[in-house]
Structures are given as structure tokens and as C-alpha cells.
Length: 149
Image (cartoon, rainbow, N blue to C red; front, side):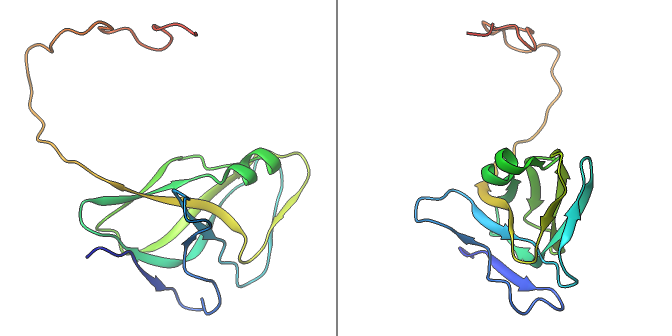
């Protein structure tokens, strides 16, 4: 299988399939499925919003759910588990967790583009236990150990 298969959930009769906005876009837009009407977000609210679709991914891939930069920078929405992962064997409804940091109430309407999905190849390796790890220039230096510049 070399395509991404989407199945509409019950009640989704009008949303377009997730799609790339331009020929060079890395992510396809995911839209809000809100058949009951718009949702008004207040500062600090976290809500799960359906995309209106279930997905079947090609073997060896994942769907990474990422924020849309305009919604994040202009309006204050973040995805708290960004990037989220949809595994290749998941067949349930794709939902987006949106957290609102803006000060003024903001409305998300049915069909609004709320996130983007990037399809990425996955490599799986066997895990083994060892007594020691090979040395590196960085070693065990953690957060900030390589400097700011």
C-alpha cells in the first residue's frame, strides 16, 4: 500500500479529505469536525477535537500531528503532546488536543484547519542491554551542556 486511506466517521458528510495546501507542503491540513457547532475557547482550556476521519497508514510509517504555525502564533493554540503520533496499526478516530493560551475568547468552527499531519518513515531496531556505551565527544552532558551560541 502506498496511499493513506481515510474513512469518514458517522455524520461526516462535508469535510474534505486531509490534504496538502501547496505542492511543497510537508504536512497535510487536518480540520475540525464540529457538527454540533463552533466551540468557544477560553484562556487555559484544553479540548479534544475530532478530525472526522479514521486512518490507515502504509506499513513502516507514522502520522505525526503537529501545530499549524498561524493558529499557534497568531491565536495562541498549542498541541500539548506535540508532535503526537498515530501508529500504523491504529484504526480509530483521529483527534487533536488543542490547548488555548490566548487571552480573549476564540472560536473554532466546523471545517477550520486546526493541525497538520506529517507522514514519516519509522525504523525499528532490536534493543539490547550492554555493560558500557561507546564514548563520544559530548559524553553525558545534558541540557545546556553545548552552550547557547
